[in-house]
Each structure stands twice: as structure tokens, then as C-alpha cells.
Image 1 (tube, rainbow, N blue to C red):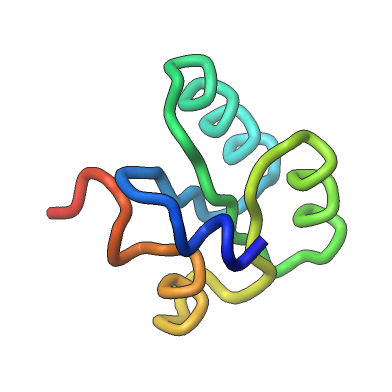
Image 2 (cartoon, helix red, strand yellow):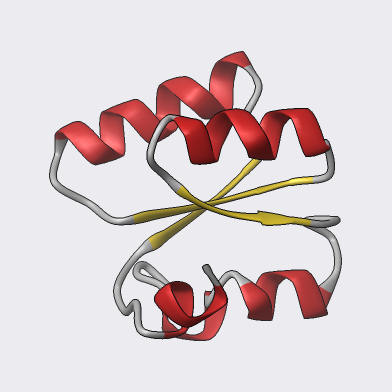
Length: 78
């Protein structure tokens, strides 16, 4: 998974895969965008992976976690 994410560019990082996060991911994927899900729940990460998404287990407030999700190469940076 880490190699796959490291090769991504212009993707979206979605923090949380609860009801709202899952909906956001579905809309982005429907629009043809690549997505990496970040969540601190092992169950939510397992569900995201089962749904076919790249995912990272960790705290979305952590710089290390966001770097692992490829934030430095993600799209729509401010």
C-alpha cells in the first residue's frame, strides 16, 4: 500500500471514513479522482481497503501520517 501511495500524484487525502468521509470518497471516485483515506480506526481502514481504496491507519493531525498519505503530492494544495 505504501508503494502505491508513494507513486500517486494529484490525489485527494480524505480524513475519516465514517458516513461523511465515505460519501466524499464516493463522489471523488465517481469524478475519476484518486483518493487516500486516513483514519485512526482499524475497522474503518479495513472497510476502506475492502471498498477498494488506498488507506493509511493513523492520526490525520499528524504530519507523519499525512506524509505517508502523500499529502506533499496531493491535489488542491493551498
